[in-house]
Length: 194
Image (tube, rainbow, N blue to C red; front, top):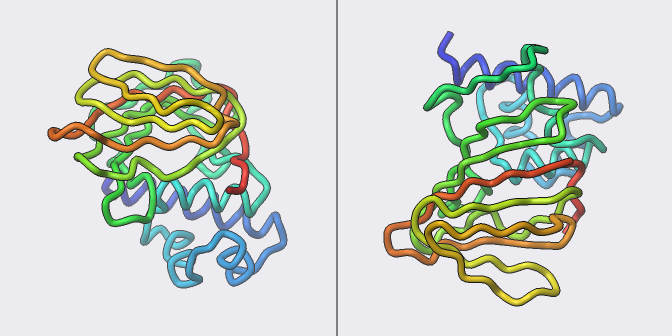
C-alpha cells in the first residue's frame, strides 16, 4: 500500500473513532465542521485527505486538538520524516491555497513543525487562531503577516517572527516567485472558532 494511501486510511480510522467517541453521526459532525457528509465519509474511509483548515475545523467540532486526529506514531523519542513523505496537503479548501508539509507532529506532543510553500497571491491558510505560540522563518521569497491588534508585517528572506498564536493571524504570499516558510507551533491546542 503506498505511503499516502496508508496515511489516509490511518487518519480515517482515527477520525471515525473520535467521531464515535463523541457520540456524533456523520451528518452531525459534517454540519458542525462545515464539510459535506460525502466528503467526511470519504475521509473516514481513507479515500480523501482533509486540508489543514478542515482538520482544524473537525478537531474543534470534536473537542480535541488537531494532533489528536493524526494517526499514532512510533512512541520512539526520535521521529524522522523523509523528504516527500507524507505528501503536502492544502492549507485550506480554497483553490489557491498554499501547500503544507508536516515535518514533525505527534499526538501528545507540544511541538509541530511545518514547511509551507505558496505562489504569489496564494492564501496561506486564511485567518487562524489557536492556543500556544508560533514562530515563522522565511526560507525563500516574502510574505505579508497580519496579526490581530498589531501592525501588518512584511517579511523577507531570512526574517523571522514569534507571536502568541491565540491572536487571529493570516499570511499571504507577496513574492513574484512565491514563498517557502518554516512554521513552528508550540503547545498547540484546539483552535478558536473564528
